[in-house]
Amino acid sequence: MAGIARHLRTNVMRFAAATAALAAVLTAHPMAAQAQIGSDRYSSIVVDAATGNVLEAANPDAIRHPASLAKLMTLYMVFEALRDRRIGLDELVPISGHAASMEPTKIGLMPGMQLTVEQGILALVTKSANDAAAALGEMLGGSEDRFAEMMTLRAKALGMTHSTFTNASGLPDPNAWTSARDMAILARHILLDFPGDYPYFSTQSFRFHRMVIYNHDGMLRSYPGADGMKTGYTEASGHNLVTSAVHSNVRLIGVVLGAASNPERDVHMAMLLNQGFDEMGVAPERRIAVATRMPALISTAHAATLDTSMRPPPRGHAAVPPTPMWAIQVGSFGKIWRAQVVDLTGPQAQSACSALARHGTSCMVLRPDQRQVASR
Image (cartoon, rainbow, N blue to C red; front, side, top):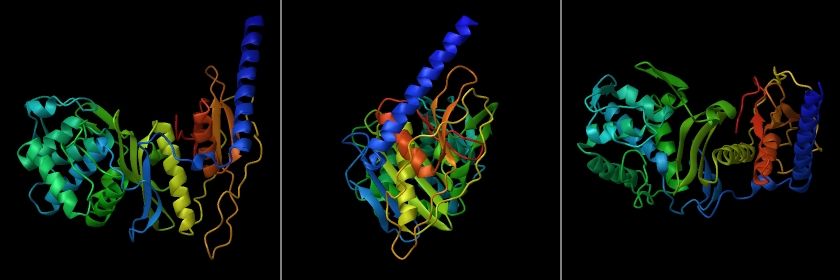
């Protein structure tokens, strides 16, 4: 019993320290999440998908390495070939030694194997599989090098003036470049040119042979209204993300390049999209709060009151009262402890975790619908 008591006292102290750190961050840095993130590689943009109008931007034309965002260009080329009936969804894609040799992430294709075009699409939008990307590129271009030339030419025709592609996957190459604005242009073209194919980006999982392959784009699960697009990372690029989301029939496209981590990238994207929807006069999405199912010795903790007047209401619109429905988890102690701060709005929760991350404190944003994890 003495050992259990000591363990509980230690956990209480850890919880108290985390809560104190949270309160200090929230009161001292109410605008912290609006700061630019990552490093000098960072750039971002948010556009209205219907018009292309830019709502938010930071270094949008600075050239950056695309990483796996290059697969959006590969997918555009595949969708174009499908539309023109040069290939079919059930057509078999041969796997060469070159394609099979691609570094992870991959689905383990071997020379001589085959997969369908549709399986290749699903492998790209879920697993971001480099072997499937190379195989599709070889199918469409004869060789991956030739396909990369075709990607670049098509990108220029779409207005992507800062983009050069050197392979189908986005694996590291010093000559591969893009920009936040170019990625927004590409994402908007995918939405407008191939509305029937865009739903592939919402795929949560698919079965390939005996494997179930899951989508690792956390925004699909963490941000209300998000229904695609693509993640990416290399050491040279940092953590990249393109996301499209719809609120009240208004669709926005966001691009974040060069973030320092996946959680920071996702939280910052959510904040940028929130700002964009505010600027468009769109009320925040509302969700029903559900108490966590995890038993806990301390079920909830309330931090200092947050400043809810960070941004003025859009012109011509009355301020929309925030609805406190989200939570953050600032501690996970043992198997049954879940230290959470509740009664937050989505932007407040996201801003708090972003600020805590910069202070070295572990934090997770919890969505109200079944307390899904938004960042880790």
